[in-house]
Length: 300
Image (tube, rainbow, N blue to C red; front, side):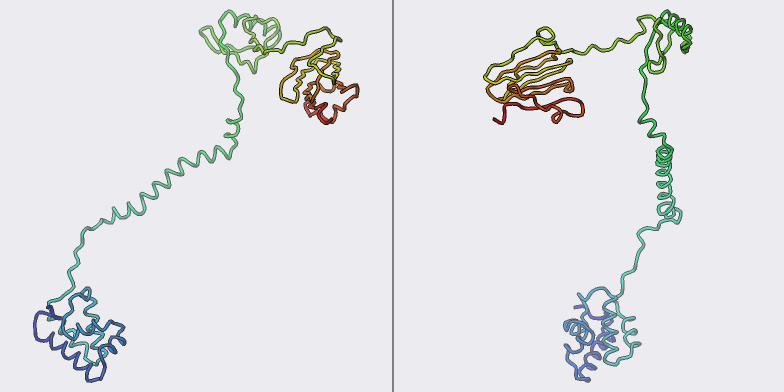
C-alpha cells in the first residue's frame, strides 16, 4: 500500500494528525466529506495515508490541503510533508515545438493564399456577368459559314458589285467564307451559291374536284363540311377510329355516322359545319391559331 510518501515518518504523522483533529472536533467521516464535497471513502483513504486511485497528484495535494484547512492544521506543515513525499506530478515533456514561421504560414499565409486564388477565379466571372457580356454570348446568333470555290466567289463578287452589295475576300488562296446571315445574294448570283430549302412532306389533297362531294363513313346521320379555302381536316368516330384525315380543297364534304363524330378543322374561318342540316357555331370552338375542335351527334 502506498502512503502519502515513502519517507515513512512525517507523511504518516500528517495523516494521523488529520484524523485526530477531525475526532477532536467531533466530526464523522461523512460530515467532513459533506463539508469538503468529497465522498467519505476519499476522507478515509486520506486519514490512512493511502492515496492510490484518487487521481492525479494535483488532486491528491488538493484533498490534503482542503482537509488540513478545515480541521485547523497549518498549510505549511502540509507543504513540508508533500516536499518530502516521493509522490509527485510527472514532468511535462514537450513532444514537438512548431517554429513561429511555420505557425504563421499555417494560420495566416495559407488561408490568405486560398482566398486570393478564389478571388482571382471568381472576380472575372462576376465582372463578365455584371457587364452584360455573358448574356450577349449566350444569346448571340451564329451564322452558317459556306465554303465556296474561287470561280463561284468571282461570279458572286461581280453580281454583288452590280447590285452594290459588296462581298469581302478573306482567303488569299482563292477561297473565302460568305456569311449567309449577313450577305444578301443577288438574283444574278450563281445557282451554286443558293442554299436549297429542305423539302417538307406535303399531305395529299382529297380526291374529287373543287365543289365536289366526298362521302365518308356510313350511317343514318350526316354532317356536311363546307370549305371556302384549303383546310386540314381530321374526323374521328366515338370509338377513336380515324374516319378521315387530309388537306381538303374548297367545296362541300359529307360524313355519315350512327354515333358521335369529332372534327378538327384548320383554317376554321373559311369553314361551315352542318349537323343533320343544322348549322353549328364554329367560332365558339375555334382556338387562337384558327383551329376548331367540335363534336357532333354526341349528346343525342
